[in-house]
Image (tube, rainbow, N blue to C red; front, side, top):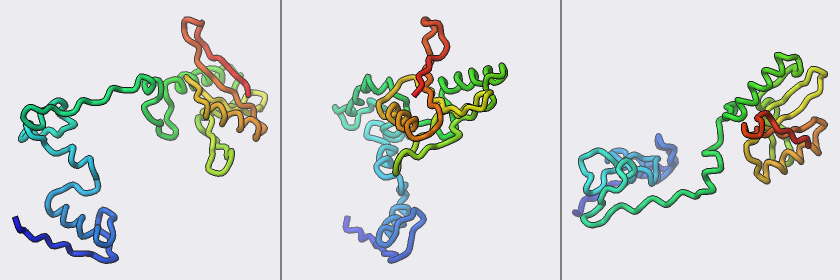
Length: 194
């Protein structure tokens, strides 16, 4: 029990995890003992729990496993019903969601018909203020040379509406909000010009 740990401080040096000073020495010790350093609290969730030892499953992989005799794992909190309305996360830059892809196909049809000369997804970013930028979904050039910025939305949030209004006030480009109509309403696209 009286095992003495040596903590060699690597003053001014940097360990492989990016830690400096005394932290680098601790990182080296933890790595030597087989701990996954750099994952923080998530490392504890990968270890087996009592009642599940030897199965190789961590707590996250085995919900409802008894952590100790007579005690069950805490239940997972109920999901917020409002959270289901919003996207699960941001798409990577240059990657379209389903509505944007459908509008891309619509623009391609318009281009084939000769109404649109050019269009590109997330082609321009507008600086609205310090640390505030706005990137419309599509930049569209009509056959007559007019440049438009099209923002495709399934649901409008207040901050998105404010950004497009500010951009419309600052820049000499027509900003158009596009919303997909429901099939029961005849389908197609609903436009709002700012």
